Length: 319
Image 1 (cartoon, rainbow, N blue to C red):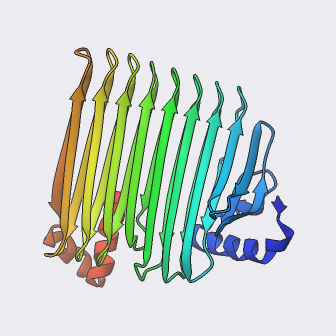
Image 2: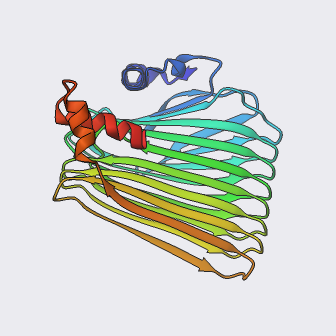
Image 3: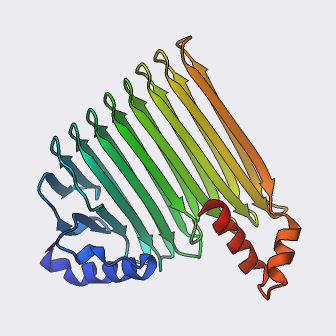
């Protein structure tokens, strides 16, 4: 692990927060590729054979991180990404550029640690190219401060080359989210497949916006975009799932499931399907439901209060 000497204390603070929230001790393991960002700088970096990482901070404070993975690279242990912010207030602007070669197999585990913060704007834009026949998974989990003063924008643009596979899992279920805007826009080539999943738990006056876009441009391209939202109190949630059947024999499915608890909750879901090629096939599902009172009664009869009972049900639904 290459720790920037001037930021060693900051590195250790962020690693401690990471370990407390995730119970994962991987960040200091020299056998694990990792990128650790605090505020507007990279404070820790560890690379392995086949992975090249470069970073710089622009004059406007944007941290730019380029991640290149060579053709035919297989990384058996997940690459860890950790972004955090240690000040009480501020702004964090990140841009990740991924260039993943052909015949690569890799898994990314990303954690965003934004606890103990009063007010923050965190924006991360990711540009991804995934080469032919590559298999990539990306898990992104968020931990935010419970005061709701955080505004997160996470925007991903990805190009999947022929026969590539990409799976994305975005989770924000263990803490309040504050305000969050998730955008995933995928360009999918011949025989390539994208599997997108987002799960978010909204509390109090949280605001949630999700937009997932599948551009099925290649023949036999396929994709799934699935969102699950649990909205309580006065949460507002808006989900837009889009699929465009441009390639012959392409298949796409979009799905949104929203569960509400509270008379002031406001949720909406909008599916958009556009078939350009007559040989394309697109489908969608959407549902808005509620927690049944009998479920709560059973759990509360075992000594749990209502909030504890709701959390158990939520964990079963969206964790």
